[in-house]
Length: 459
Image (cartoon, rainbow, N blue to C red; front, side):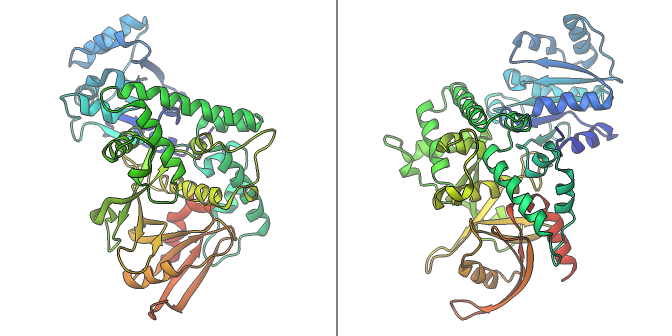
């Protein structure tokens, strides 16, 4: 399967000032596969060391001299390692966290050797060791689950992907393209973006088995909770993970996580789950300008899961010989899926940063209620994103938000075909507001930077 992030790894490999790079992300998002695929496509010999499977390899890294380390590895593996034709890959590096601090020596002493590392729970590793990763010597790259575009490509839907990529605001997307894209997106909404589930779907695996894969993945994550020993009780972590799934699209209230779970425990558990990349906190922002995080706070807060497949496993969404149609699900469940899928796709807009983009929402504090589902930073602009699970719905909060923040561009997502319209109306408070509204279905969120840039160029 083709991963879009592979292009970033290709650019890294060919860069003259290449630094060792650490791939971070939740378990089973495809980090190891990406490195193996990179070596295959580049025609380089992959020297792969799994430090969780065989922790004894850590003793070969006691030296700070890369030639000495490679000599030890060559003897241990029974193979020669040539810096000009090999790639060194340290997988599950969290099992030997002190090695993160040693990556700098490869950059300084042997820059011709490409060095990659990958692992889960890396945030805990960094906190547990008395070293710091040297700034400017090591790079990080966040790996997310597969997005809808990658899902289409995996299914051989290149023509459809091309039709979607070519749409620009002000144009009509062919109705056939909209209908087919909607059907495929509804399936993606059930399968999710975890590579194992996508591969099973491509292979024609029946939905009930894919749902089993999703449940198995949640079980794997729960087994990982044992590695949080000393930080949090496993039952509390499990309760908060379930609470994230229940509260999708709504404020996550610590006091309502579960019986016996105290608010400070729930807060700490959410921090741990976010550090493990099992979920992402959606923070409240005042949205008065950029960066959005400069006016963000942790209360109120929402959260989304790393992948919609985890939601189905936790929510118990049914699947037999076929997946249920979205229309057959309760309105509440459709709304939760919409919020999860939007957040998951927004995380892909700038996945080149070491930690991935943050997610934000806006809610009026005091006075009349009002909320905007997501507020994103796209093309150097504050862009509010309004979500509707169906084809219609009021936008009173969005209208007032646009007036109060003096913005000229907003995004609305519903089940209608993509569109663009100029809004000119009076808010419920009597304010005259004008702005441009782009209708972007969830199946086009991956192309939001291009859509927004094209719209701004016409302003």
